[in-house]
Length: 392
Ligand code: GLY
Image (cartoon, rainbow, N blue to C red):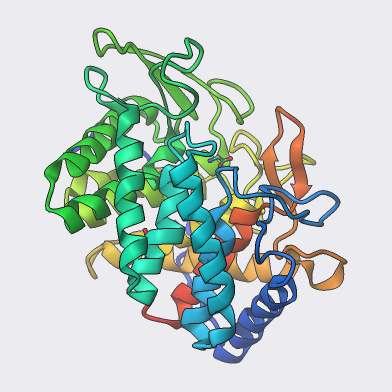
């Protein structure tokens, strides 16, 4: 067992949380209506990472966030069975193929987000063999970022960039499923080994003993030794960036799903406790978990990711586990809170979730919509109504 400790400190999620099916259907219909309104605008182009004054302005497929839109289209298609989504999915898939062939802005570990939600999903949902081949090529590209000695995948930048050399980040746990997929489909263990090594290093160095997380951590790539933790989007190097913690919960739960190593599930659980212990009354986290009250911005996108992570965590725990239902209750309460007070229902916007924060230190996308928040909100809703097979 790991040496990481964090117990749930209060009973606020013990009472059974229930989702009314009519309410849920209306909420999903709201999200589908927003997607439908955006179909023409985002056929060739994609929504950017964050909205400007609550409006997503179309851009080319060149950021790390380009796949959240196609991910939403697959969810919409799976839920409704309506063919109207397929033409846009096809156009978007072509764009992801071209992006890989032309190597457009792929010096990033987020190849995982990009090609899980576009091509792995395309293979899974549409049985598209070409999408499968592209996903495997994307995995080949991702593993070029692996440092053998440090046993980590470098997050950002050219591998020769001294500022980014040997830097891993908590978000990367969400990129590993592309590698698990590639191993499964090719029978080649190398992708799996890299993913597991990286997840173990993240567990060892990014996760602190109190179950909080660094956003990023530097490793010495020459001798494999740990160097130091540093934030990029959090409040301080020692604080706990809320979205990073959410990526951690969901990401470690996914490494458990793909490896069966219970240590990963145990870590996801401790990280979840840390997060749940620091929520304000309406259960939507501040952008950094150092804040538990006051006027700092919330990050609705972190709450949406967390709701999905908690549902996945709960699903994988045994019936007798003391927090199995607690995690599910917490996820449901977050979904309800998002629906009641954090959607665009009463404002002019082409986004779905209000009050997300992309990067507060960079004053980028602060208190706007973030496209991954919209995606994970829909994923969370879909998880509560369908036996949904993950794209991760
Ligand atoms: N993965 C980058 C972010 O969450 O902002």
